[in-house]
Image (cartoon, one colour):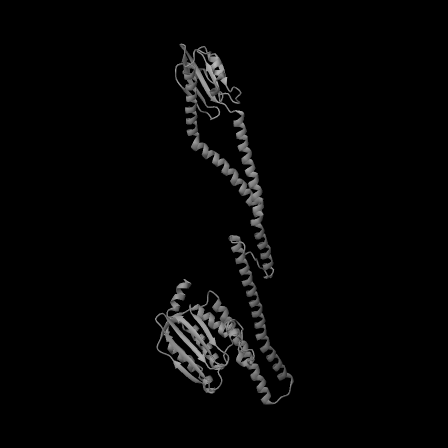
Length: 461
């Protein structure tokens, strides 16, 4: 069984060459055989006429001596039959195949008719009637394959064989050139299957399909390497986020069981346990939410509703936060309708507004502006908070990424909120951008199609 691509390429090439030669000979034979035979008959007829007319112009030279000395007769094997059936041979008599002349053909030519037998070019025979000195003769001409013809045929055959051999050697070398990079990519794929993504093919000199494949392979390895790094970071972050509250819960539970303490200390420890338990609950809820959003079967229930009213509701719901911090709210909320999933977008606004309130110091300002358009709606949520560095802005929507790692645990959250926001906006065929400078506040801009829900629904179908 042929398993290697290299062997298949060589065999396919040889089969193609041989098949091509056979088909070419057959086609050439079909196209030119009839034409060549017609031309051969015409040429042989002219030779026969020339032999006869020239002899008639001689002064009764002996016919036998005449035929033996005529050079025109040498490329042919000529047989002449008299009325008694006696045969005389002239021209090139050392032919490999002598066409059998039947008595019926001899009789037909003696009666004055031409006979043409074209079984093949080498043994085609022309029977031509001859009359002189009151007697009838039958002259039969057959092309003679002489030594030069045989040498030419051998030369052509050897040339074809040499072409086949040289071509085979070339395809053997070229096949290795083509198959070698595929083998390298196969070995690289096996390394990737074992978790080694440090793979690169610097084949810029190759501009063919294999070069494009190698470039795509390198890009794929890089993407997989990044995904593996993200997976490891994700596992590490989840483990850390889970381990921290569990450690607190276990530690304070042990203190409650073993240590004699006042009621105030006991209440303080219980509040810490409750806070950490709520953190675990929120983390679990956010992980499930993110996993659901990334699945193909996440529920999506769009409807037409007033976006300005939804933003007002979120701001009212967060009143305890901005009231306690004495924050100033600057709201620009003109009437605007949108067709989208209200529950999902409510979570977007809640996350963004809550973040602005959380990281804006007392006495600061939070701005919420709604900018409706003909085919899009834009929501800008800005603050005068601590801001985000340019380096952190590039990864602010990654899972578990926390821009300010110096924040206390109560403020820092799980690092999943903005990842969820980004995913919900993507599901609505929208975009989200962040513009910020450290110490000068942050502005999140969400742009949504006015009918994003309908577009999303049509995409689902």
